[in-house]
Length: 119
Image (tube, rainbow, N blue to C red; front, side):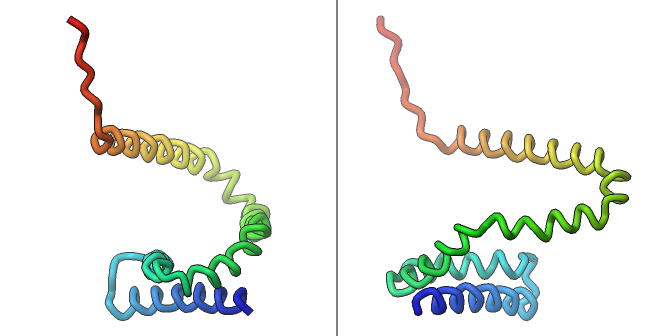
């Protein structure tokens, strides 16, 4: 029964995020707002248990979520061959830029220990 409650909570959070994005006209996608709402709700242990009960089976079968992507690639193979090199380059560059920005932010925020050179 906890699994069903957890799935209901997950879907309600996503639906609330979608509704908030459309009604308020926020520039964030609905699932992102729903995830933020879920993160707030997970502060309560009464919510944490059912969500964990629902998330565990979903994570065990996560590979099934890649099936639609594979079918989409096969269905649009012509577009992939036409734009595949550009998409791959954009993916590679955006990944490296994201890693670089993350490293720079982490370097600025990480507390540095000042080591004195022995005199």
